[in-house]
Image (cartoon, rainbow, N blue to C red; front, top):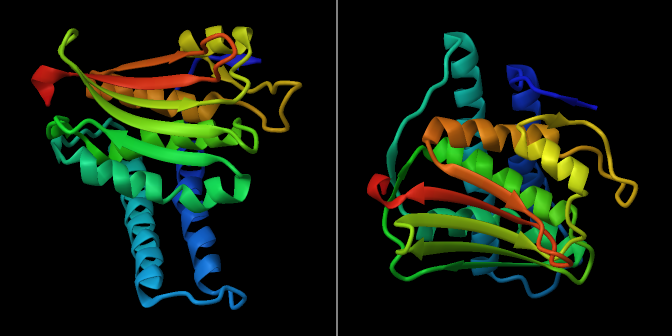
Length: 233
């Protein structure tokens, strides 16, 4: 079943708080695990920092969704975003989940990647969904790569999330490209739907005037990317 409509505030809020909450639950569980031996103070501080960043992310997402619902209008606040630090914080929040799933999660950002002019809250929502979906559909032993690239040929800044999962069924992929909310599930996975997360990414990309592309190279998993014009960086 597919439908073409905007995500309601309640559905969006319930969906978007899952990723930061998962990080908070995962890392506080690690911190309180008495079976872990030889945990250093620095490790504990690193985990606490991830929990803190996840909580800030959760607060920002809640504030924005509720603010938009009260205003009955889209809200976009463009700021300077240092993606070297931003991307590191985002990926760190998924490391424990990736470890538990037996999936490697790596970040690589081009040295010449400049300051990105965008809305950090909307970008957080998009990357959270892109990485979460990649981890969800990548089997144990697979990998998820998050890259920040500068494409001088197309004068664009590109954020890529690529996984080694089975990919998205072709009929579902076509529906997602048409902007439809997919609520069916694949026989090959226990997870239902790609709809709300992809809808959030699509809507946020429109707000930020960037391109969102999703494709599945043959036998090579799924590639999701955001392309920002260089002139807006």
